[in-house]
Image 1 (cartoon, rainbow, N blue to C red):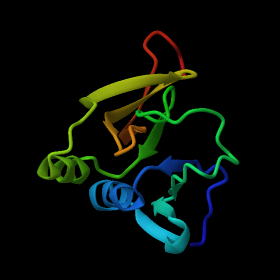
Image 2: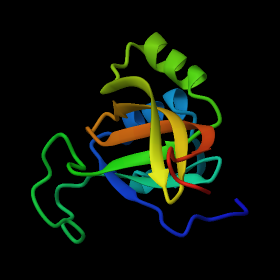
Image 3: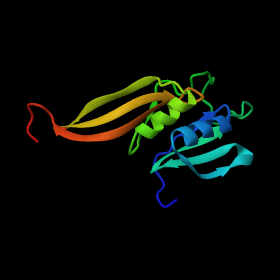
Image 4: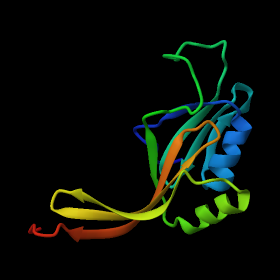
Length: 145
C-alpha cells in the first residue's frame, strides 16, 4: 500500500470474521494485510484506514476499562466514499439496519459550507460509522468568500 494514513484507529472486536464481513463485504474495505493467527487485520478503503483486532479478555495491556456493547461510545468514524448508493444497497440486501437514514447535511467551514450525503450504521460491536459522499461547497449566506 503506497499511502499509509497518519492516524489509524484500532478497534477491538468480538469476532474478527463477523467484523471483516461487515467492513469488507458491506462497506467496501479491503484487507491491506493481516495476521490471522493473531486475529488482526489492517483495512483500507481509498485511503480511509483502520485496524481490527480480535478481543482477548485475558490481554488487558491496552484496555482502559470494561468493554460493554456498544463499543466506542462517544465517537463516530466518518468515512468519505465516492458513492453511498452501492453501500446502502449492500446493507439493505444483508438486512443490516441503519442507525440513521441517509440525509443531506451542510457544515460551515469558515466562509463556506461543505455539503454531504451521510448516514450512520453500527458495526457488529456497536462502533458507530458515518459514511458520507461529498456534494460540493457553497458560500455561507450573508458572508463574502
